[in-house]
Length: 505
Image (tube, rainbow, N blue to C red):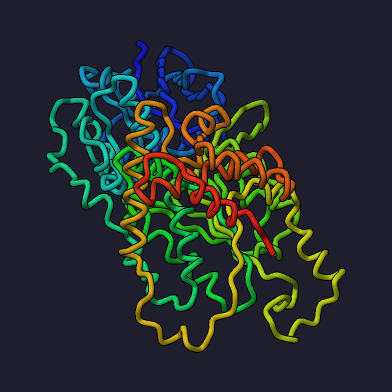
């Protein structure tokens, strides 16, 4: 008799529907698992044997063959245990199979029959739901993650016997109250500090408002203690709350990466990732086998902050070229292709030189011109070209420290919201979220600057020796500035401000 049980696997950041086929036939007692399973899958034989007998069932003393289909997809992890065990119980007639055709089983088994939690629950449930599966049996440890889904039956179980009760129609799906969007959007990391605490950098706050409003990458250059890190750390506080689609997308990434748990059942606030300067290329963009997501993927829909970017290894920064353009990471490992999303707001901060004081109006800089040139050369022209906005932060004056009429996060968030609403209305149905995601054709269609603005762009292109990519970015920045101001059309003064954000001292 052959039984079929549904489960799922994780490939990259996506789930894959897996069918567990179990055949019990006459022959010497043995259990074989086929279908490109890794060591954890092959070792499941001993865990399952002990879990079945410990739960009060009989482990068949016959030849058992388990096939994980489709066979060409590599299977990794111990979460197939529960589905294989249910297949054995069904094929041996110890449980009914009425529920097996529409219910999936996910979970690792202990020797005593307990069902243990696993990573990747969210992308697996999402894929099963897309394939028409009506219910899913999961470890009780993962039940809070599954709260994000309100259109599929969830059966949280602690043991193999409880999972068998689902197949025997004894156990019903857990009754759940709908999870409100407000609860999902609550920032689990607490309140973000206010921009009002940063004194004397009003121009930088304006640039940050533009960057967040349009999804434009930002490079801040300035001597130590000018507020670069303080400014960057406050950026998530002025971003709009994630919608449900973004929440599901972000939570699936953290689930597949194994970064969710009881204390953090899903990623709720906008991600803010700040890797150290010693990070490797694989740590930043992802790598290894099986590939794990890098910091740029973990920052998806949020902020990736590279502090002291001049101190990173050059090859690490150069690896950002394609992700900044494509908004995704493609990795090929052992003939398999893995695609990781990477649509984040890149914010970088750097000193003007190695000692940090070049050009600050004092004589503290000890660097020679060659040393300054080499330090700045760590950020190559192609990388700088892909960062939309460049600003220079001057040292803060003493008088500015006591200024109470400073721009706050609420004031900046209001402008960002106005711009995001305008862009959502403009790009409805196009797949584009923010101006920063426009391609060349989109920039020509939506970012034309009128006669005066086009004349200014022409003069700037020739006098400042801009390249086509830079001109393309200036157009998008000008469109964002117009959205912040509530203007329908891009005017010459919007272009003039946008050009200021492409200069780097």
